Amino acid sequence: MKDITITDSIKYVGVDDKTIDLFESQYVVPNGVSYNSYVILDEKIAVMDTVDKRGTEGWLANLEAVLDGKTPDYLVVSHLEPDHAGNVQLLAEKYPTMQIVGNPKTFPMMKQFFDFDLEGRTVTVKEGETLSLGKHTLQFFMAPMVHWPEVMVAYEQSEKILFSADGFGKFGALDVEEEWITEARRYYINIVGKYGVQVQALLKKAATLDIQMICPLHGPVLKEDLGYYIGKYLTWSSYEPEDEGIVIAYASIHGNTAFAARELAKMLEEKGAKCVKVYDLSRDDMADAIEDAYRYDTLVLAAASYDAGVFPCMEDYLNHLVSKKFQKRRVALIENGTWAPSAGKVMKAKIDVMKDIELVEPTVLIKSTLNAESRKALEELADKLVQK
Ligand code: FEO
Image (cartoon, rainbow, N blue to C red; front, side, top):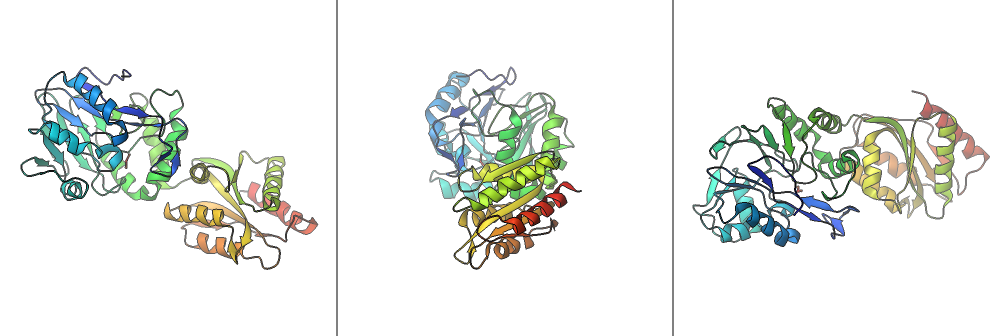
């Protein structure tokens, strides 16, 4: 087991998963993912969440090594999503005297996932309530929709550790060296991005606590410079852009819209744009393209018309952005059509439902291929995009 030191009495017992093809059946995780679980050893022993069923064997071995023959008194279930609660029933049956700690929303949901008898096994906690383990005391704070309704976080008062559930997590196994920010942002925007208001509410509660360490359910334990991580969460959950830059996302059938998108990128760079990123929505990782739309302040959507609508990967991209509450950005449109251009209308309808979008004109119309007229419009758009 990889040695991840928390403190003398709080131990990491989670596992890495480096064979999963798609996390949540939709996100590529080239460096895998970790399912974190912790044990607090005190007069009473608490296990902080289980792991996905994919990691049962390794997790049980880690857990048994740390327990060293002892029986846990509590299993704290901060989140019932199966990547964490996959082994609740197994642990409950292995340790019949163990109590399960949850909140009023936890147990009805637990019965939907499992069929063991919860009678006499539950400890229900509410906002701000505490559970003493001896020297350690857990204080619970509800975090509804971060990112399921039953989510709660636990603050361990004596060592000032926040067990933050999915919050502050990232993609990537723990034995992989990579910077936190990229995979944490892709994780946050795509998984929790819709729930900015609820994340802000949780951050407000966290601001009242003296937090020295954050133990999330995915990714590394955060021990230093916590203001940096909390600052990123404040930005992401407020939907404000994190950096200045222009993302060009294109949906091209035969390459002509792709060519126009790349020409625009060249023009922008020549005109001094600070950062330009281009995404091929047919081939690039959709979650990356969504992450960067959130990261930067300007988004250009370039798409071919298709079946009297828009080429499907652009529609998919826009549906994701709408569902993740994409807002507060400058957006420009490029549509391509050979006989009856329709992409622009569909894209415009999607951005019309987003909040605080500034549409940068002109919307560029390409008829099949970039020509002198559409190139002129593209230059005009590039000029507007580099002006603030
Ligand atoms: Fe990592 Fe919402 O589960």
